[in-house]
Amino acid sequence: MKRRVKITLLSVVCIYAVVLTSVNIRDLKVGFDYDDTLVFSTPSFRVANKSGERPYSEEYWRVVNSSFHLDKKKLVPVTIALVYKALGYDAVIITSRQGYGGEELKKNWKWLAREFYFERNKSSILEKERFVAYFGDSDSDITEAREAGVRPIRVKRSPKSDNKRKYHPGQYQEFVLPFSD
Image (cartoon, rainbow, N blue to C red):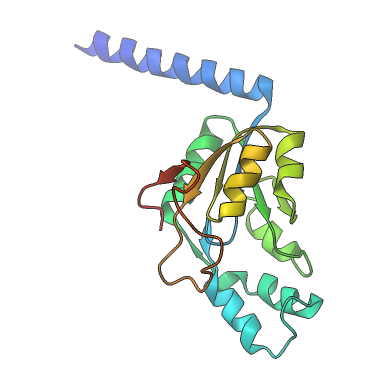
């Protein structure tokens, strides 16, 4: 019995080593949107909306980006990102926010992702590297991933999210991640 357990354990370790090595050699990545995908960020936007700053101005984005401590991590997407990372994939975060005042936000996510981009045109980043999947909540996340030749995976928004725009899960026949809201 003990011999069978040792052989099984050794097999699992060997399979893991093969997967890890092949992923690292090919430099594969998996991408994640930030707002309403990795985190529930409505509280940060509410603070910015109450700040008196003109919406979408440089100062508005500074307030949003510096309020990241109010964001609540979403269990399923973050867990999936950690599994990919354990398998050797580089996790990359791409948000369509403006980057003003975003350095602390980027530092806060170094434990998960070496790369954190503030970029409206996500497909430009997805096309440059070897992404195998992109997780996002909005319709544009799904369409941009497809344009870049990357598999899109829809993350459900929290019903408490203030962001109601461009959100039609399943409309593009994409995989919708269960329990991700």
